[in-house]
Image 1 (cartoon, rainbow, N blue to C red):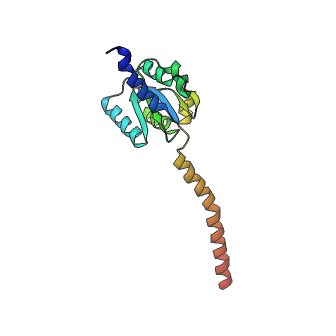
Image 2 (spheres, rainbow, N blue to C red):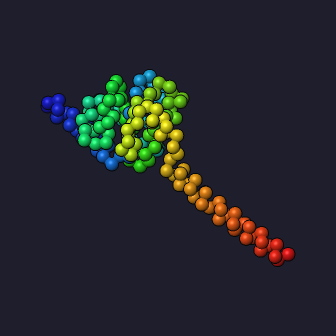
Image 3 (cartoon, rainbow, N blue to C red):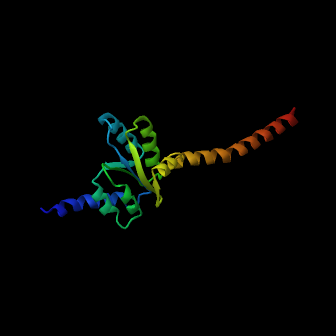
Length: 162
């Protein structure tokens, strides 16, 4: 079997992974212990993020013609890619938070909603709360004035009864 025939399924797998993805972040995982790597993979999996190690040339071939093609310049040395189809900030947030306890994990770059970010940009994206957190804050800010208004009306009604 020729080498190209062996590589095509891997390139197809990566292309399917990137198809419809909201975000992808590439990292250098050198220096992580097996225990740290296991914990990181568990955190990412629980958040619905796919995390895999691929050869850089395979990622380049799969990303060609997609918004993720801009990651090309960051694909040097050992590379792992974290991809999310649901939450655009999850890969950046989880990887950045994990790198605080495991400084050997180095964020290289990422693409979030079609925009490419360097290492500093990904760290900034990591500070954005998840979609669920933002919805919760929005609902809380909408509910607060209504609750206060109801409380005032209740106090007015109670004062007129007395």
